Length: 200
Image (cartoon, rainbow, N blue to C red):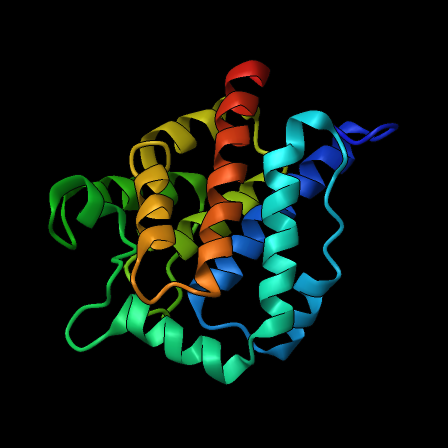
């Protein structure tokens, strides 16, 4: 991903980690007002190659301005929880096999253990939830994991399904606030595909 004019490699990695952390926060639960306020302060980059991402960030800021936490909570329930199952199922196993708790989750758990990540006793969601994967990847970047290690994790546990997830989220019947979230995720994901391929 190109850096902003005058930016450093450290700035670049901080930006990447922050973007993954933001996606994790938005997908983990319906955002509270503090997170919506943070979205209002987003400052899109100006590089020509980032036009799609800048547009998505502006749309996300507009959505944060026009939605209350209560509205987004109701939307989140419809999208991800529902009665029995939400409109969108944010798990890697579901996208890769059509079922929950399948081999992709086992493979992910093996890699997480190898990387030193341990499941919290307070965590109830499987580790292949999109928010959990984004949170792990944000930590990997912040901890200066090598780009080859990042690329292996990305290719094994993210590249295989997250593009389809963002497409489904953006097209979901109940998606309103989460439509620009999907737009932002898809635009950032596309840049990351190019970034990791180039940097590795």
